[in-house]
Image 1 (cartoon, helix red, strand yellow):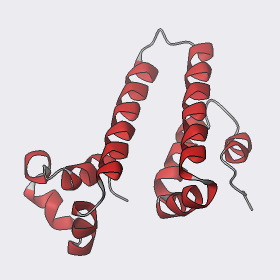
Image 2 (cartoon, one colour):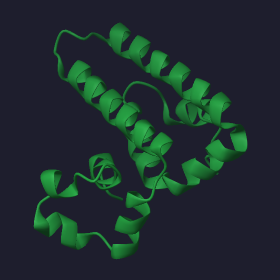
Image 3 (cartoon, helix red, strand yellow):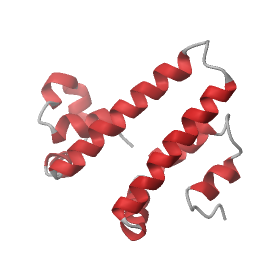
Image 4 (tube, one colour):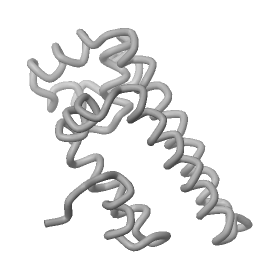
Length: 129
């Protein structure tokens, strides 16, 4: 799976500014074509995802962010997530999630230090079996 910044770079036509030639060569042509042909809404969502990840990484890296603040931050992100599910509809949400399985697994792994994995999976309506 490729970083979100790669997807955004191609969707925004900025791949030459943000990726080295080696990074660009690794990505299959079909994948590049798919990224270049996403809707404006998808580009906006990628931008939002990048902003949220950046802000979250910055907050988590700060040593003064205690356990309560991390938990509260995650709960607010979960609220945003559930609002997105409602906006997209459950069927579209599940389809998109299945396309991004690796990213989702990485996210669950990252947050499993704050919450038990089973609880996280339950929140995101994922069957662990």
